Image: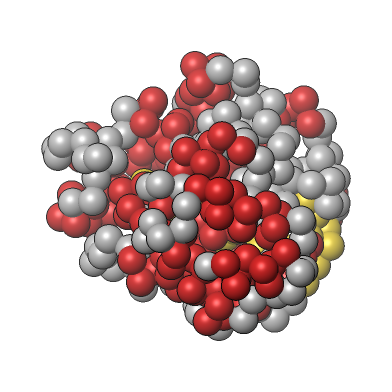
Length: 337
């Protein structure tokens, strides 16, 4: 560990094997808290490399709690977090809308670390009960097209790192890992990142492993398509910079996406949107991301068609119905810790 820290302090990059050794020390408890903070800080001060990201990621996937779900025609929808924008849970709602449109969604997520409310926070407060029970999760997926994998249950190797991340309160390389370590590695993925360097890395990694994917970044810093200005979309065969008007959508303001200052307020906003009482601006932010997710399944499907599928799923109540069904089934097992 000391040699690896010295290399980081000298502003040198780790190769993939060295990254695995470093992260193994962190996750197996052989690194002390001071060493973990030092490693996090050193990596925070520069751009992480693809080799480092892949090395860290491989350690987590090797140590994951296994769950056998049919992920061959499923999608994960998530963002790296860490954009500091305090928006409502756009990617979580987009995932639910995609399920409402009839596509399988196996969402991976966690409590907020550098933000107030993560996907786990909002779903838990909505009534969803986390589990690693394979049969229960499979039932959720078959009955509601939706299930949720709460990261701490599936990545116990990160247990001792959680308090350190929380105390730091800033985005770290752990934010980069979340969207890449879904335990079942779904065939499709929509991921939001908060800068263009991460977009390039994610595109390189996902192009090798996913049947269809999109990586999105709003150029004013959001880890999703915010519609507050131009945004970039990267897929396996193309990269586009688009403006809202390119998709026949209106530009909206940051204040339109405010996520609340308490968990209760965030849950209220989430529920309002899910029940069809969201503002036009809130709805469009959810639907544009849901439409891009739907396009991951079929690259030939045009955006307007995907957007209308998403719009119907939200406005007809199908999205809420699917989430409510998943919540109901999740309660058939005890909460696991």
